Length: 348
Image 1 (cartoon, helix red, strand yellow):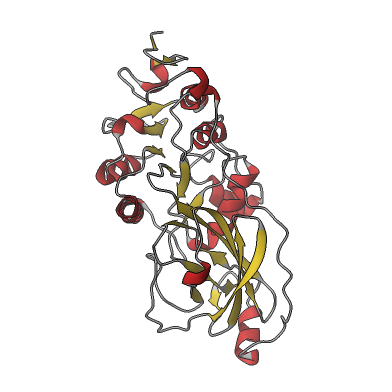
Image 2 (tube, rainbow, N blue to C red):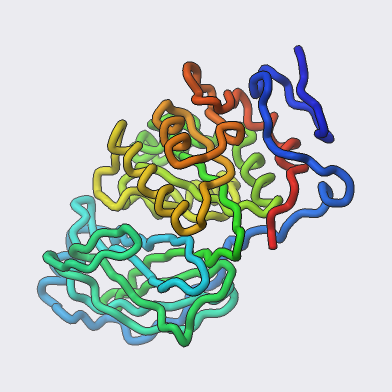
């Protein structure tokens, strides 16, 4: 088996990545041994919330709550300094995803993932609302809270907790305020990181979380250690956002930003591709350049990454055969860990 070595401290087997593959320019020496600060998991005890149990609309909201368990979800965000900053969430109950409308929600911030401070409160939207922010459409159960400029978030990772005043139920979101020249790696989730394309949906029935492909957490951690911000982009329905976060943590993936669709049914095929192109185009506009690395497992991922300008030499497709659009066949994530570990650091 031929190997591809060049300036690398380690060699890649050609069977793992294809002849002519370029991952990056390893530097070796001290640079290769020094990692960037690890991204924070942002886990801390919840804030002390007082004054719950008071509904703005007692009859209507108690009917909504009777639909079943809370399925609230926050919206993670990449932001840049100087931009308008928002805390965004959706509040709904039961398998019917019944919207909680016109109810008060308190908004808390863990600045730099350290200690909680209360930012204020806002009411959830009702049907017919027209305000949309950060690509998230308006509608019943939505909440868009503008973070006051006097309390703006600095560069770093921050956690938002939303608390429904009526019953104390919660949602969470993470905001990464990116430094200048921040670098991003984007990955699909289903089939790319999970053991199969439909494993997560099967887990809804079996209650057994799917496995991750061997080496996938370690490969993404290798990029995180070099300073790349990880963006998990999935066409799953929005109500799966919390379980997606939980699965990534359970399987040992690095903390990152998670985006699902904003709909209740998710997206498939061309609709999924359009969703991902729109998301990455918005990110490219924000950064001024495309993500540096891309991971996928379907032809639609190839088309998406090529459309938004991900360098094909840095696009990796898990066990995908056919036209890779200049990208790389990824037969085993474990073969990527060592080369990623000696990439130049991109943290600031």
